[in-house]
Image 1: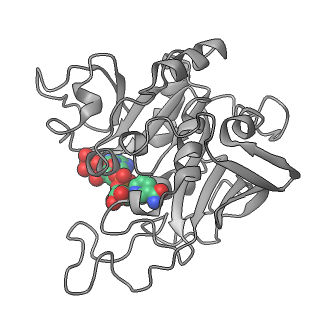
Image 2: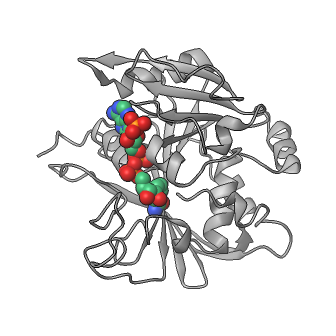
Image 3: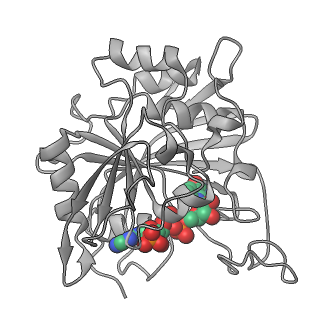
Length: 294
Ligand SMILES: NC(=O)c1ccc[n+]([C@@H]2O[C@H](COP(=O)([O-])OP(=O)(O)OC[C@H]3O[C@@H](n4cnc5c(N)ncnc54)[C@H](OP(=O)(O)O)[C@@H]3O)[C@@H](O)[C@H]2O)c1
């Protein structure tokens, strides 16, 4: 998802959005209250197949009601206050946050938890001050305009099949590498296992983008999907207009890109929230092994 920290650094303070709890039905609550009851580490038996050899992976994405994952190349225009609050609240509950390099570049990722009082909330919950920031990249073309890498307080782990590193001096952040290549391609199963063993990551929030999502789902590595359905219809086959398509993705991006899943991945609905006509759906990914791609 878009990194909304810059748009609204503190969207869940008193007066922040209160969401209707449609399923399971309960009184409205703030996003923080609601997310605190989510049991994202799976310890309350929501998912008896909780993996022991890799982190539990939670995918968080936003789309229009007709399936666009971007407008004009960004996900920000799809996000409202409740979606932004959910985005931040989920970050407060996990050990690590991961995104593909394109998302990190396009959305100009910054510090994962920019607000000091929210970092204290994490510490009070027994978590490290900030989630580990994980970037999946082959080319390592990450230097330059990415605030996360320029932040000396950030700890970044780059998951890559490459033996190369960022150029000396390219990052002020602490940078580690997980290098798991098989036949020259990134082995995501091994990379996630290394995240678990080497960095103690039990819960991993993946924030996209669609190319990374598809690989994770295809490899059976996603346990839950949070999908925000923005009350918007974008129409069209393009991201942008036919006359001015987004040069990075002329065709409209959906939350998954790449080959078809055959059979489709099955989801089970766990929860539905509503705010201002936006729907916030929580699914368990039941058939985690997509059965190969067509
Ligand atoms: N609606 C939403 O919730 C949402 C969420 C996130 C992003 N987005 C949008 O999605 C777009 C970006 O998504 P995307 O699907 O194009 O890209 P992406 O999945 O974020 O990143 C793709 C990049 O990740 C690296 N990568 C992925 N798989 C790899 C592998 N197996 N081995 C090595 N490197 C790998 C590569 O980086 P290198 O190029 O460095 O090798 C690749 O170019 C943006 O427009 C963003 O705004 C929307």
